Length: 231
Ligand code: ATP
Ligand code: MG
Image (cartoon, rainbow, N blue to C red; front, side, top):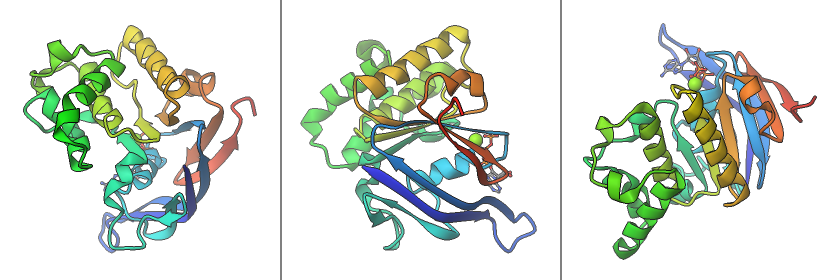
């Protein structure tokens, strides 16, 4: 698995009074097994970049390809893109919409045509990965959960698609110190034990500098620094 971003620029609402250039000529290569921290001030373009990685936004200019296939060569990205890149949104309620936690986690794999008979064990495993008990949570409404639990359910939904790359947009936002610690060890585990490539978006350099093996700093839509955290 590898992601290649070439001269990627993105403008929100072009041609309107609200036009905003959010990304300016981004170039980046992400290889298998990397653990990347992506930091930058509010409004620097982190979430916009994250949404390009899994094909939610279409570049205004430039290209993004995964394993040599350009995402936008055809009209839309390949339907099975989420097998390669999974994104947990900055606001996880934006990706929770079913009546039960079970249905929410099963939605992605079902869309990928994973056989119905395999879903219960896949949902169970995904919930267990994020530290939620299947029996306790499967029938609950995703809307009646705490912020940290919602984030875990959104994450389980992404893990259930078994994507190689996990993009986490501020996964510790809104968590208390204990929740933060748990989230960090959970992601560490996913990276080490389950061999995922991880892109962790954060405001907070201290939180992730010791965790990652590459740190990318964005500033006003551009990549300002990209290297080992020590540098
Ligand atoms: P934060 O740390 O606050 O989450 P960010 O680095 O994720 O910030 P983005 O959300 O990518 O920043 O926003 C980049 C720029 O694009 C900002 O100037 C923002 O105001 C603008 N922007 C983001 N989303 C939209 C939108 N839907 N419509 C118009 N402009 C937007
Ligand atoms: Mg953001």
